[in-house]
Length: 168
Image 1: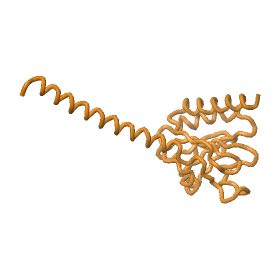
Image 2 (image 1 turned 135 degrees about the vertical axis):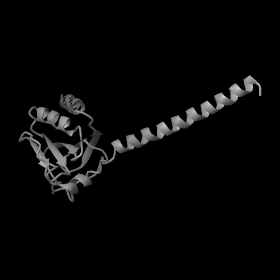
Image 3 (image 1 turned 180 degrees about the vertical axis):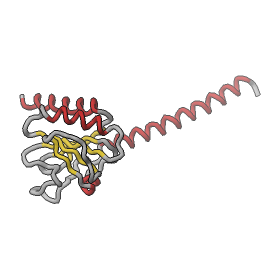
Image 4 (image 1 turned 90 degrees about the vertical axis):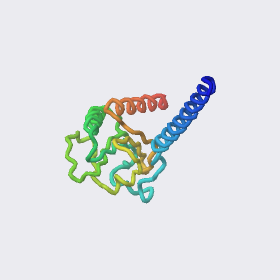
């Protein structure tokens, strides 16, 4: 076999492998993107007048942090939420949603803690820690994975800045 033919065959195989890897990577990115939007638009309540086990607050918006008992970075996220909770407008509040009935992390009184596994499962977000925004009717309007306390602070600060712009 001539060297030119061998080089063309090897390069063709490498290009095919590169395309296969790119297709696999694209598929994983799409799955992650779909998981990020999972749960948006879901009503967590049975009707408009009932509350979703404490997640929905009449006349307000709840920022929910979904944690589980095996989450190694949730403590950092909860510390960031504790710092942010003191500076929130009156119609915004934090809630922590845990699947652990024995959840006992020290949090300020401004943060509601919901230890209901059924509500935890009903949120439908396949990752933890997760950040959800729930309106007064119990409808999830936004979900996002939160990988650190810094990420939570950025999301909340960005939301507060957008909210101030809309009010002006």
